[in-house]
Length: 383
Image 1 (cartoon, helix red, strand yellow):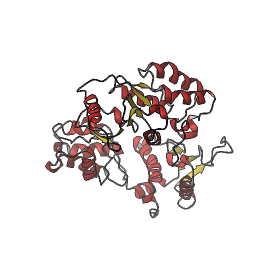
Image 2 (cartoon, one colour; image 1 turned 45 degrees about the vertical axis):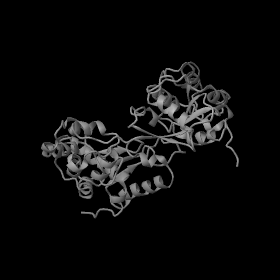
Image 3 (cartoon, one colour; image 1 turned 180 degrees about the horizontal axis):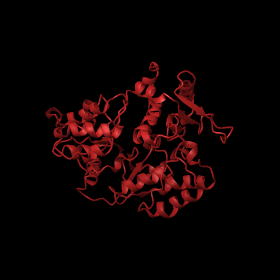
Image 4 (tube, helix red, strand yellow; image 1 turned 90 degrees about the vertical axis):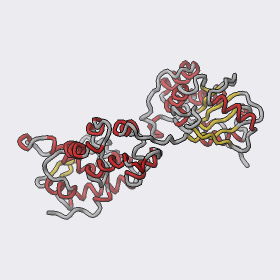
């Protein structure tokens, strides 16, 4: 049996690619295996290879070594490939005779149960350690590179230890999942299913705010550079507006308007009376006749932030003085295509509830099929 390549443990992308061969083999009975298993190289089968650059070149060299040095696969280039595309584009990898046994040895995947079957077996074995419902945990395998299914399930069982009470989700994640504080970020609903009585300490949302001497409204700003520039009075039209750094979608969190769910940080020394007025409005203790605005990038993500913010701040609208100059540039075809900046995944958010956004900004985005960032309009303040 060929020795496992020393580099395999450090290349998650290649290990995942090779595991796909075994996944396909494990899904079909031996009697039905009539032709060799093959995988096409594309953004779905090995995303890291199609980000190009030095890492992609290194991955391609490793893949070629699987044919040249280890005789595990055979590479068939795509004859219809664009000559300007990398040679690995749509190349077909076919598992060689004897390749299955080599891969099982390398990846420590003996014949028998499929990955999802092994996962479900591990969950069933530990079901008694979960006080809640395990249906969601058992439905989908949660793979962690370098960790056996049993170890991952055991990590979930540790969430119920008494010492974990009243920790934040990030703290729980770091303690139980090998120091990875973000592992549970998208799994809070699953945790509450497994542990209905577990008290998870709310992690306050951090919000940066600037309060001017004269207050004529509130402006939420998407990007940090635009926020810090606005604090210095550039653009001048936001001089008398309370400025709030929106920082992506964090201001749409459900707890953003609850005293224990947010931590307000003021830029410089804010007038105590004005600060109290803002907090009374923010926490819905008193209403104010301040107009509330949002200003961000003119793209689908920016419009999505506006839509999300409107769930928490119903009066918020797109800020015309910020968007109109950007809109003019977009109409002059001075924007960028989604592909130029990696924004292809952005989705049209649909109606936002703001007339200016729904009747002017979004229709223009759909027509021009281009985006433009808010920083383009105003020159930074020079010191």
